[in-house]
Length: 202
Image (cartoon, rainbow, N blue to C red):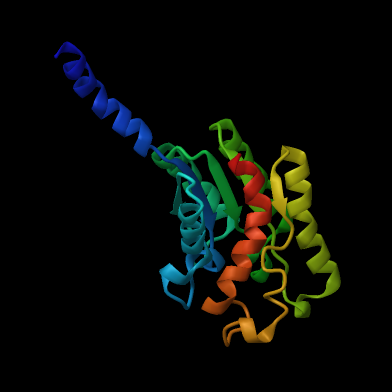
């Protein structure tokens, strides 16, 4: 009888532990927020489905906001880290900085600070790089793209150099604005992200 009572006392703690999930926090802009498509079709939602299908106990929190910049992401990161206490942070920002012609050094500084804050909280970091449209010119595009590799190397963070690779170059996968992927492109985006994320899940 005493053993049975002991088991009953332990059950709540065991259940809480068994149901506990590690957390992936995604901090991005419209490319991750599901602009123009339903949120259930976005790559972060598909990521949660993939993790569930593989029996991996991870909770995906998508804190992406359409139109956000690295400055905006940095301003809201601390509260997000405190609230979610993530084990992995995926940073997918910078596209709006580049499209708006914002100062690239500021973008680099903001990304570096976000990676540092995430790592200091105990989280692993995956940085998702992006490339600007061809009409921005090779000099600006190359300088912009190099920032992601530089920050990742500086902070020893994981990197996907261009997480829209194979998508942004394919007109049929993009919405009419030429900037946002369609729902049909989201699985391909997820596979790009997965190449950088999978090693961090171990």
